[in-house]
Length: 285
Image (cartoon, rainbow, N blue to C red; front, top):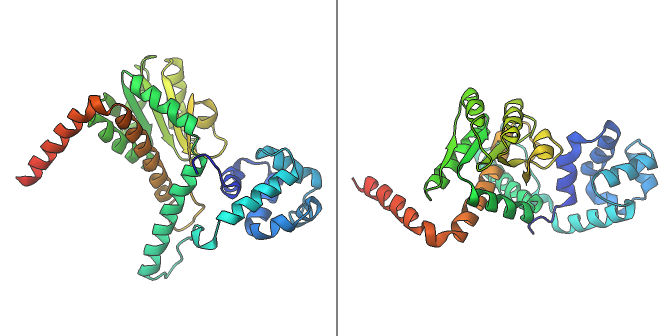
């Protein structure tokens, strides 16, 4: 369900931004979530080698009024979460058939987890901002820039004026030319990439609308952007982290594009037909 964040996903994504003591509680929960519903606050504090007060603070930090409400949420998450759906990291020597299955399952789960943390109200605000923008700018570094290129390609097809650059110096230079009529979409998995944070600062000074696509956790980008669209990605070691985040980010871009295209279909169907026809003609040659 959209925006119905699985508490286990929430803990996993927020863990790095918690205090060291709260991280102990989080790790204890994620190690074996199935045993948590049978635990008292005293038992969980003992398991995590913290205090009962620390467990309670952890519950409040992740959005619950108390331990009992937290336990109810864990129980609900376990009812829909199965081992088969869990992220599986690659291991040295995996058979190719295993690699195929693990990559496919992890990508599917990354999309499902992203949908669970995506706020429909933020999506609606983002779509409205894109629709009324004079120009749309996509900013990202490294693998995130590949998502920017895909996004620019999509929106150009429906005759929306949009731009993206790979070089960060060019990105920063163009950010200084933004106006209040422009919409900026900043893409960063961590939300703390210095180059993107710098562009955010410039965009805000220019009073442009800002939309962040970033991981579901506390970050500079999430805390300072006007609109935030969260993604969820797995904790992995061998499999490149950019793989999971790229799939999640591309999904969010597809959602934004499809919403804009659907709402403006009468105006843009001619553009879609023209671009499709010219590509098909090119392929026939």
